[in-house]
Length: 393
Image (cartoon, rainbow, N blue to C red; front, side):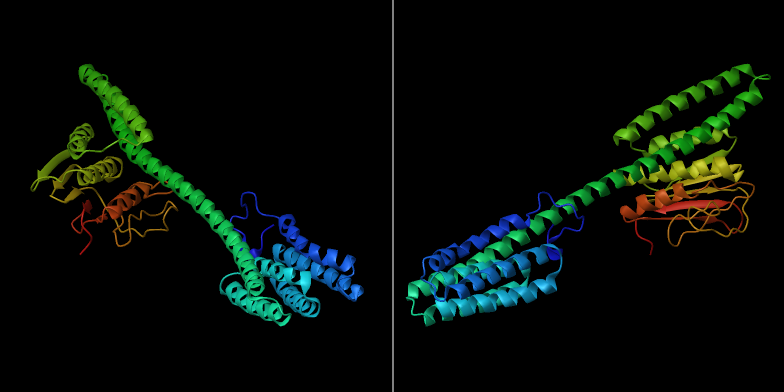
């Protein structure tokens, strides 16, 4: 179990370092054991007692830190530094090797700026204590550098481990975000594809039913169109799954004319200037598809005008409209396309649960490209859906 400041937010770091490896640093006191046992350290009982206290304090620092109890660990770290300094000043010898042990404890319990400040102070105390016992400059430098470097290495290792854990978590979150985005793309494409195609199939099926007795030849042609539309829908769904589908503007206009004609709706297409190319053409193709689908399904219109500009498209019908109060997005009582857009309202129709997903999908597509969508009833009657590839101004 890692200390609180080192635990990745997902709580599942790979192979976290445990307390056992850090306990092994207590072997730095083996020299004190040897010198006390052979009588070098006098009085021996005080040396033994001091060593026991140092080992207990060091173990407490490690365990408390890894159990996410930093404040008691800091108290024990301070006590450890005091005991080691006192015993090294009194006995010298192998007790000086416990200064690096104290540095390791600092690296475990502290982090950030605190570990650097405390290690610097401990290094000064180490140098002063060793120098006061008459050691050479080389020994002073060795113990001082050992204390500082061991603490810094341990702190750096734990920090590096925490960074690796965060990188793993970030990578997983990015993968989840990519999956969510792909699901959203597929849901949006599936809605746009099937909403339009099924509307066309329903219209043509109604035409077949009306013509079956009085004009079998025409009914047969309409039935053939249903088969063609169904096959095309199947192909487009496959393309949507693989992510290669593109709703080009020319193709959508041709399909719109055919679908509107089958529904008995007059289609007028006007083009002011060249149509956009590349992604802009694809986006405007989606607008035409969504607009025509809504006309066929909801409007009761007899005439539809489609105007194509260099960076815009407008689908306008003469269907019936009435005042409409949008409900919250997705509650089935309103149709919210985008902040600031108007809301469609054709009487005698019901918006499915989650209504407005088509217009919301368009708004999302256009917004990512820097454009915007507007939709709403016209003052003189009818409904208008317009999209522009530039931001609203």
